[in-house]
Length: 173
Image (cartoon, rainbow, N blue to C red; front, side):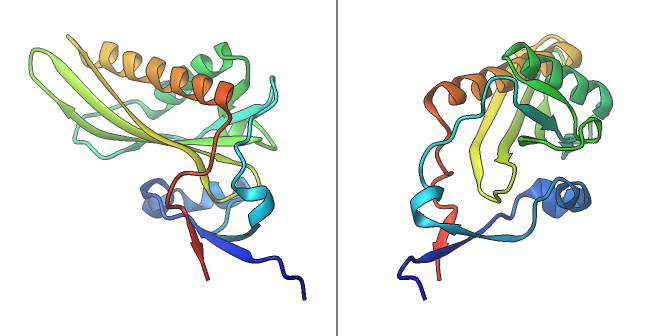
């Protein structure tokens, strides 16, 4: 038996728990994954041209949002950052998958949106980037576009530094 400690990582996100588990499983994600201490905690970068799949957004608001248009626009913005990107169903294999939740849309005259997102690298269960975006604009379409652009910018910027494991995601058994 190796003296190497094994850590088990548990990912419980609203995106997976709220009915997107089938797509996540098809992308190679499961509920737990043994991760060795030596290779799991180091920041990781995706190679230029890596495939980043975009999962359909989970809309937690009462506002009607076209998930296909949202997915296409986010994939386009991620592509502009130097990756191959498209809907989860467009690729046989994904180097990483982006999960997004539209958490809140408020305002009558001036719209405000809050979205949360995470990136999970293929073969891992640990989110490598968990963040949120906020945007304001005069109409829903513009506010969603601004938030999508900010999400893609955060993904690009995280790649420059390398994406470390999300703090608190690892539990030792």
